[in-house]
Length: 98
Length: 409
Image (cartoon, helix red, strand yellow):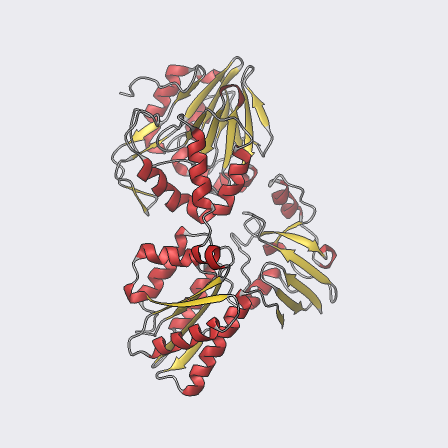
């Protein structure tokens, strides 16, 4: 199983391949914020400190929305668009960017 | 009758409108003095920029002011600092009248534009650092998101040292004399506006202030209420002070606040609250306190919620629901920044016991971190139940203090 570490809430959770980050938030009670949940609003933007390679690829739409934030987007993801794409490895995520 | 045109400087003019009769704004805000929807026109040697429009039903006086100051062909840019309808209401009409105008919005506004305007409009995106030129006038954009809409930005007119701050530094206060040194005492409206509009976004206010302080500001031109030209730093400092007030207890003792809010009809939920509080208070670094919701007014609820690092709510179930004071408490979160507060719920029940679960779901919707399932006890708690309550309080408090939670899903 892969491991997701939610740095802002001190949660370390083991998940199986294909688990969405929305499910991780729901099951752990983590405080990450979701807005539209369809990748439009960028409320759920988060910083992937390491382990980006264990998540699914960004879609063209996600790329576009992140670019509109006007920041270096390489380590950013929209949590509502993320799912684990590995059966091992560790992903460190921080979502309180303010 | 629109009255005389008010000039902020030789090249910047007020094109906003007045709404003296409005008494409730955005459903939640009382506006005893009415309000204004401010808009500004900037004239440069090579064209004109319109900074925001107005609420749709006030379009006529807005266009009258614009027409007194320029020909529509001269308008080179229309800047919307955010898309809220009270500032974008005349946009489509203005775009239609101004054939050469380019709309400037923030990156976050792009996905919202269609939802507000309902038709395709050409636009250009501005993030921090982007500038536009009107010949001898340069406007620089600053990304100041979530103040109070996600897409909010501000801009600075270099040559006149004017900050167009969007809703930041606004007041719902109608007074056609417009400038802060000429209008009546609007200080209560300035603070009321901050408390109701900006307080939930304190961290973003502080970020915006960092950007603002890089500029030499002579005038702050907000989108509601008086234009601030006497000592703009005073207003920046007020926002800084209100946004960075340390939590009282944290400040004094360096501890974290664990607050148990409860309401009880036969003392059963109260007994649970006592044990949960005792359990939490056992943990180093925690100050746990109990509050009976039947005796708290709304302002106290807001202050206590803001101070609390953990919010634990207990309610009995009556007619299949939590009781009203518990819902009233959670409704106060609309005025606050959540910032990852820990939440938990509990309650005694007689028959079906929905209350704790319903409050838990509502807290999830309000983005609390909810590390435990609701704790429910059937009618009168046994000794064993009360021990569970103590453990529940201890567990939630440990997590509030940063204990790593390991789990598998």
